[in-house]
Image 1 (cartoon, rainbow, N blue to C red):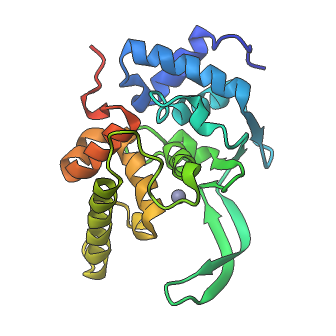
Image 2: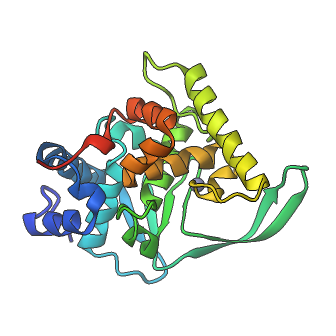
Image 3: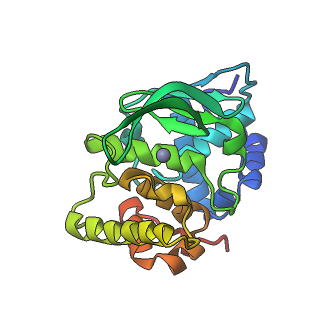
Length: 245
Ligand SMILES: [Zn+2]
């Protein structure tokens, strides 16, 4: 079991080396992330499900990825939940009710790589964690924890509580414009740069943008400069300009 007081050098080094989104951080930011990840591990309960061997490397990797979005915001942003459940594979939520645009309720099984319950745990599939933060435009951890940030002011709607000096009007306008663009592109059968899943609803759009902001920041800034600017102000980070000296 992981020591409660520090993350051993070798273990931390291995986690950072495995995840380019972490290796990109300056040495000072990386040290702060290490401290925050330790607090996270002490405060949250990481639970293995389905027979997964949730070893220290996996725990530290999840904690580090989860703490990247709150590096400048603090762990209090995650105080509304306690447990993170990790499955050995994608998991099935049986008999899920989904209401479509016409108000029709569909019931079916949902296969998921991650999920964040309102006032409940974050659920992750380890194989998707393993490919998160590697510059492939995918980060299920940033995605699910972004939902948690979004839920800080009630139901997930794509608008987390913004900082003083930020304009909710500007935020909503920027995100709504790009969200509608994406939906229009899909309707025209065009292949969008964003994952089509982002067109599901504004909360998924926000979560997908957060993944890209942290995983492929320079590409995201090039494709969606207005969204990049809003997220940079919200997260108080500028990952497109972070480079180790
Ligand atoms: Zn989502």
